[in-house]
Image (cartoon, rainbow, N blue to C red; front, side):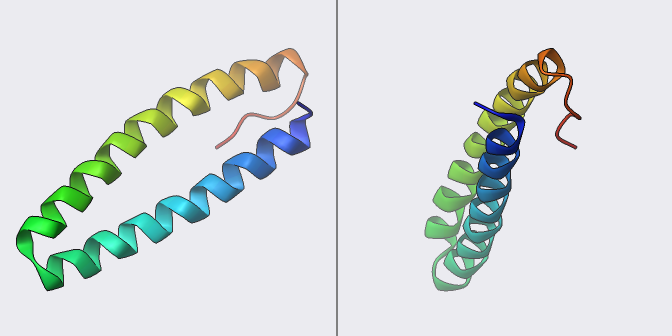
Length: 69
């Protein structure tokens, strides 16, 4: 992957994370249980994102590219 492809992938993922957060907020309005389930999924996705970001930043460093902020 090129640096631009890595950046684009993380930009897309960031947009998906924002959508998931909005869904969680909506779910909480509909049902506390649904909101709790959605929140748990968002938390798991956040942990995955942090791990993927760290790995991607190593790949970017090897390519002499700026890290993902």
